[in-house]
Image (cartoon, rainbow, N blue to C red; front, side):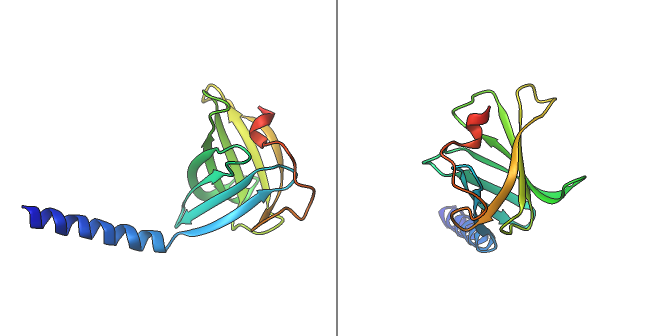
Length: 140
């Protein structure tokens, strides 16, 4: 029994390791905001976090095609600064400097309000505008 459990755990770790090896990590700065998102993409799934110095939000979603926007990473996000609110990011995909993003909020799960939009920079400080001091989550 113990041997079967150990072999099962070893198989699970091996599977997890190979899945993680296929994950691509990209750092994205929202131009004009203090937010620096770390996005992890594995096939058509995406998850990530905002920089702790700015907001510390986290979320996950999918890669797909959005009517009127094109290929996108759609990420539902949560933050302790706005309990009860669900935020949704729409980022052009694949991630390239100059790609566009839009940001929405819902409090009832039925209607979405766009809070902001702009462009982003991959890997580092924004080149399309000064780095802001506020998080996009502060717009809510």
